[in-house]
Length: 287
Image (tube, rainbow, N blue to C red):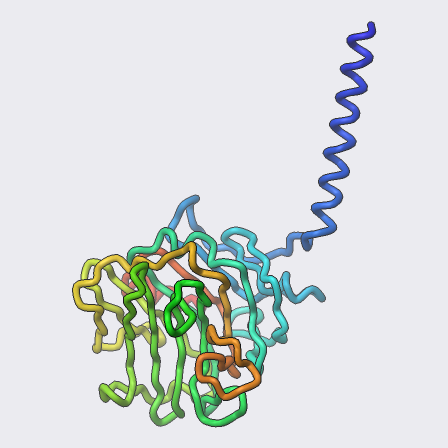
């Protein structure tokens, strides 16, 4: 009888402790929102997906990554009507901050980044002079001059728009994949205040990046000569930003610190090179 009583008391104590711990966890973490999910098997190529479809009073819930239920550390951006459901409206000196892009950098050899955006006219820096605006960046402790492992930025006006992607590998070698004035590859109508779908697809087998706009591949594939696997150092990524560059000078005209003043919707990161048909499906299905 003594053993049974002690065992019973021990079991009750464990149950009580478990309830207490669960209660603390619920206090520290927002409740799970009703967020959209894509079909993606465990370990599948879709590593990060923020639809920005939340409509709760907790802005963090509205920007949750539904692949890993990864809540941002901060989301100061307003929710607006998007291409599908809700989107976020970029703002000067503000951006969404996550701890990590899940396991994307650890897994990616080839990769794809896809999103919808809407921007009206000339891109601006944070003092509202002409300058780039960033869709995303990975601030990094890798010691690279940019303070980043990767970023995607857009620059110019509606007549001559530019898209630039910079990546840094584990050796601190970097490459710019660009469609810009210097290589006569500017793109008109990027900033016409309409929703556009953009996908950037890097194929490690060819070391080439293809830019898709509204489901159509730009014929000018940009390359990182014989580089192969993208090889980003996941351990050095200190933060993931949507809507800002990697810099720390938000109150200056520092081109690395500029924020996106347009709208962003349906942001995805894959550790695979999407096919042209897969990119077109994202566009036609407004994903």
